[in-house]
Amino acid sequence: MKIERFSPKQLRLLTWWLPSSGGGRYDAVICDGAVRSGKTMCMGLSFVMWAMCSFDGRHFGLCGKTIASIRRNMLGELLPLLREMGWSCRDQVSRNAVVIEQGGRSNTFYLFGGRDEGSRALIQGVTLAGVLLDEAALMPRSFVEQAAARCSVEGAKLWFNCNPESPSHWFYREWILKASERRALYLHFRMSDNPTLSKTMLARYSRMYSGAFYRRFVLGEWVQADGLVYGFFDESMAQPVPEGKFGRYAVSCDYGTVNPASFGLWAEREGVWYRIDEFYFDSRREGRQMTDGEYVAALKELIGARKVEAVIVDPSAASFIEALTREGLPVVKADNDVLRGIRLTAELLRTGRLVICRNCADALREIALYSWEPGGTDRPVKANDHAMDDIRYFAASFVCARRDGFAARSVGRSLSDNMGWRSLMEK
Image (cartoon, rainbow, N blue to C red):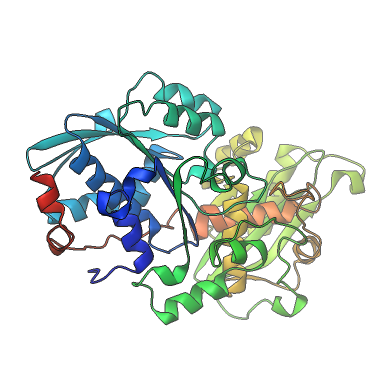
């Protein structure tokens, strides 16, 4: 899809570093706000253009939570845009680097992943003329601060992009609230700042989220998650098991020995997944523990004669996974990103693509009790969460399966001509 215009907020992000825009007053830019607001693509484009207009023969950093995420979320659409504008982009996958050439200048952009505390070692020792941190709020503070410290070239600038989290988050406290003293330009994006989103799509996103996720992802606010996790859910959303045949089947499992175990049987019809049956065993309530063999037998009884596409299991349940594999069942290790799983589950429940049937009493009991920890920690209470865990495994690892992301778009050659990049490069 071709982008024909930019919103005023996007244009500010694209041009903030130019001398005519007062770029000399700032050492950094921070963009936060709603999802799908167009900030990621514009930041990547602006970062590369600034780097190519300001430096030659220098190194830069492009950082995401993982290298795969920075490739998916940014490079997947950025490199085709630059090539269409006539720029040379050589993606050196084995080096995790991209070499970009334009107007006789050449710079190297290295890719880094800020997954955990150990990631800071990956960026130590390199000298950078600038760094872009996508999903900055999802990275450890040690990695972000190490990346910033590597920018020691005269004229270097920092670029931060993120969606909101809790107001107690260190990035909100240390960077957004202190933007002025850090000489950072702060730009807050809303969905309406993306001119490629139609009114229909804006309305759809508004329906997808609720509670803290609505305020964060749609309104772009840094708010605390509190109360019930699925506060929008009520018993009227539960349905009887539909009659007739289903097209596909899958099972999701939260394994427990001392803690309860919960298995859900899912069946699909016309794009809707129904939780048509479940198994739930609480060893404390029953006064005994079940063996892996007994759990496998219970799972096979739940499945019956149906052919399931996948048995999604918590990846930490090693012995149970081994037992299932020996039985020839199609095991899938679950994506255990809790917040992502909760967000996707809420989206699927609200839009009717995931339905809990009325006979699934334990899932319905837990969803009415599942709540956030007090104090703004963005963690659910570790109680009444076993069916909730198996449901989010199913949502994140099977129904959605890491498909969220932007589609590539093109701005065409006219961007570099109309915004004066060609004349800047020739100076």
